Amino acid sequence: MLLATLKTLHTSKKEKQMKPTQFLQFSEAVQAAMDNDRPIVALESTIIAHGMPYPQNVETALEVETQVYEHGAVPATIALMNGQVKVGLSHEEIEELGKAGAAAVKVSRRDIPFVLHQQKYGATTVAATMIIADWADIPIFATGGIGGVHRGAAQSMDISADLQELAQTKVAVVSAGAKSILDLPLTLEYLETFGIPVIGYQTTEFPAFYTRTSGLGVDYTLQTPDEIARILKLKWELGLDGGVLIANPVPAAHACSKAYMDNIIAQAVNAAEAQGIKGKALTPFLLSNIKQLSKGKSLVSNIQLVLNNAKLGAQIAVQMKAST
Ligand code: PSU
Ligand code: MN
Image (cartoon, rainbow, N blue to C red; front, side, top):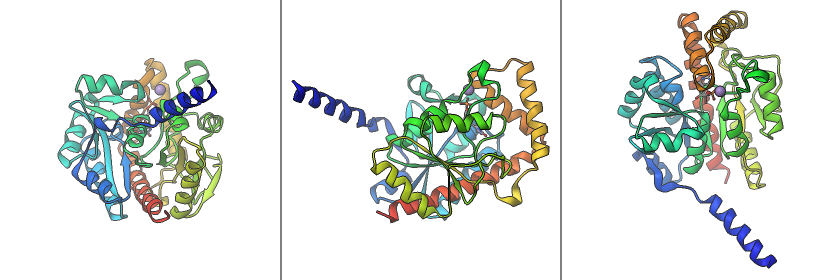
């Protein structure tokens, strides 16, 4: 009886570990990297369709891919297109998605089967990109900023599904922290509650996207991609599944001033409140308002920090393969 129960438990655990690889459509470059056991960095597509205007979104997405290549890894931009889960996009596909912009569905965990079934363009958020990267066995993912606990969440309960995904999915996300459109102290509390380690890369402070500092700490400060790679491996070898947040501050030369961004973010948050913007529309609304209010100034920082994260992501992915 006990043995039967144990066997059932064992099987169900095994079944849980089975990944739906039959749904994955790898680009040639990503397939070749997989076949040759080369390092790969996953990249998201909401940042392309909803995070930046055309054509800078496409230019940035392509530069990000170049950055990953230049640091020894292969980029795998993830999106849903024509009923397929794409792991790695061609330049033409990146262009299509960038042009589609807000017409592409913003896809988080709950949206994946619907958008596949409807054969729509789906731009994957941090949460959905983590899920698909995990299906494809890609443990490193680079982006700009993650979603988090929104200001006023005690009333609205608006907490990004990105945080819950970090709690359960075995992927390390390289970001420049989070924008202060969010309640950053509550975001860090949530990460702590769900056991998600926050690593500061060469920083003791949690960066706030446009700025290198936030006045808030990180759990651990690490100095090299090699050290990060070793600790990620150790965490997962110990069976401590779930994600890790790697916080990489925007390069100093491209950081915005805190006072300037605080003022713009406050205006954007007020506009959202006045117009009653809620749910999945809130983050894109805030992002596009900030862009307009800063007259493109914030976009320069945004592009540079994403490139910087792509570089670190590639360096960590290379070390993950090197230290086996
Ligand atoms: N924050 C940014 N830029 C972004 C996003 C968040 O600074 O592009 C995008 C990411 O794709 C993130 C998503 O996963 O928004 C979070 O949306 P929500 O808050 O609705 O979960
Ligand atoms: Mn939300």
